[in-house]
Image 1 (tube, rainbow, N blue to C red):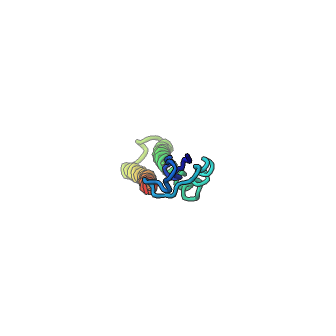
Image 2 (image 1 turned 45 degrees about the vertical axis):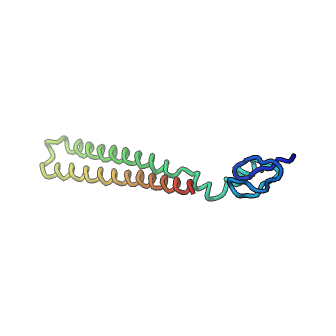
Length: 132
């Protein structure tokens, strides 16, 4: 009695069957070695899908936000210190300095959020590709 195998679902069939009733593909005498499956998975498209660019974008976006907020906070403090404290700064200059710092912090935060959002879009696109 010869056992036949489905190369897709790896199902076993007894003698007399020529195709898999689940997959509809022709049966083979023996299953391909796992080496063959590994080579099949290492196509360019699968390598691209396996590369986790979305993780780098997500974590990079968070780090970008943190560094930007820290940098702008330090710049603000240094400006105040260079002017010998808040009492030396005139009202209009201080308000402009605070406003400029907040605007730059918001801009940098939005760029970081853009990177994080872009990483989520890539994740969803990869999920959709993997389900086809």
